[in-house]
Image (tube, rainbow, N blue to C red; front, side):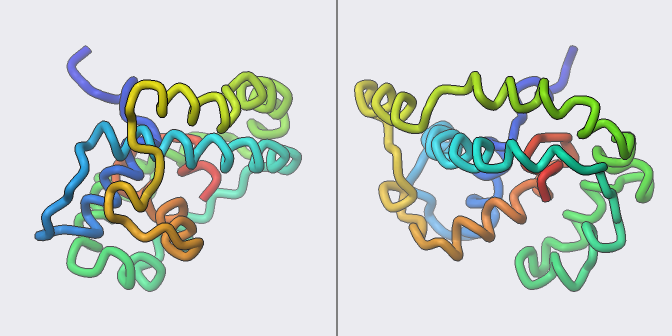
Length: 169
């Protein structure tokens, strides 16, 4: 249908975030290598987050899109990030149409989908068999808890797409 939304998941947002974080630097990894590493990281994150679907969804755009929160990370790109996520105002954000009771109604289905994902070990083994990179260090990115936390928290802003990662933020 002329857009990339079906393939534009959180793994791609992490990759784009890492590219933005290293703007004007030589990035030694291909986008697909970054996406594969992101998939490994997100498997664990999603499985840990599966229990967060016991309470109603609270969408607070003033907090979610606070300039004070985004500017230290996105710096000179902050205005572009805000425009990307709210091109026609707050109601145009990808999260705006989620009903408050949706997580409670869909909690079991969401947990079932997450449980059906392969384990980290299975995906890691398959990627290694294919010769894929599997760690942030292999693509010259910090492998610290702080960098990973920042990546998971701020990558969803890279595009105005509804992903599980954006929902969790």
